[in-house]
Image 1 (cartoon, rainbow, N blue to C red):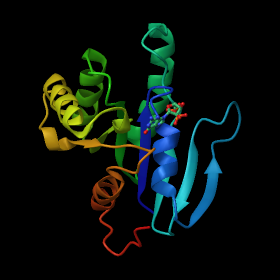
Image 2: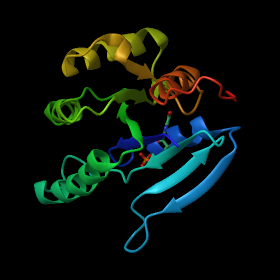
Image 3: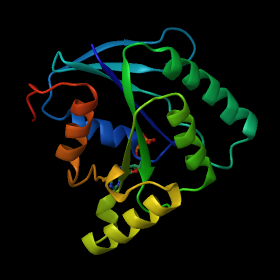
Length: 178
Ligand code: GDP
């Protein structure tokens, strides 16, 4: 089955976003990587695709060494996984991304990994202010505005659109949206 991985800083709202997407879906928790702490969690969705929940990476304050370790593990998974169709990169709509995020995007690009950007916690803003934030984020990342999916796990805003992009990447067109 095609796989989509989810990545984001700790506390960005990754679990909430995944849970929101998985509402009313038929789920099978297929496996998690054995040993150590559970690094990767796999969820089979509607017998059609698999979500891979990647461990959240540390705050900016975490040492370079720590970030490197996280990076190496994830990088190996992402670059060698034949069934991986893309990565949903989760950002906080309240926080304008910087050099780290630009580097991450460049890395995905270099490795030909399709990326879907989701800016979550949109409910913290008015619709008008959401657009301002979305524009600022796009500018900071040097990408078109419509590549950023404005999302809220609280209100479900952006859920259908995010699902559409995910199914697109997986080349699935007969999927029961819930
Ligand atoms: P994770 O560490 O990235 O998996 O983040 P969580 O999903 O556990 O969320 C971290 C915190 O952000 C929790 O307190 C959530 O309640 C909150 N949160 C997550 N998503 C949203 C959202 O869409 N809107 C709001 N207002 N809070 C959110």
